[in-house]
Image (cartoon, rainbow, N blue to C red; front, side, top):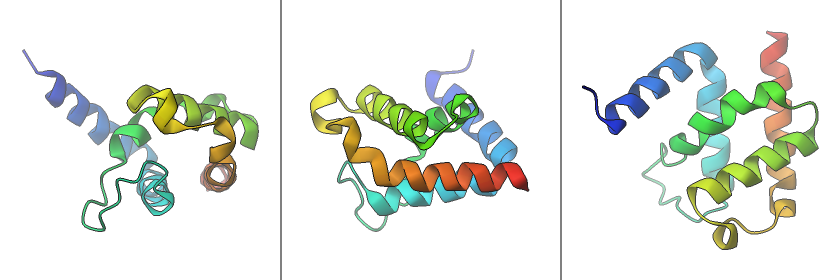
Length: 107
C-alpha cells in the first residue's frame, strides 16, 4: 500500500506531465511573489504543493476574479486564513496566473 507522500508525489508527477511548462511557470510565479514568505532562494519547489491543488481548479475559472478566489482558498487551505490574508492580496498574482492559463490554452 502506498503512503500519502507517495500518492502526492505520483499526483505531482502526473500533473507535471499533463501541464508541462505551465506547471513550472506557475511554481516559479508563486515563488517569485512569495506571499507566504517561504522563499529562501534555494527552495524553488516550495510552492509545488499549492500548485498541485491550484492547477486542476483553473479549468473552472472564467476570469481573473475566479483565479483570485482559487488562490486565496488554496492558501487558506495550506496555511490558514490569518496567514493567507485577504483575497485582495492575490489580485496581481491572479492576473499573472490568468494570463499564463490563457496562453497555455492557446498552445
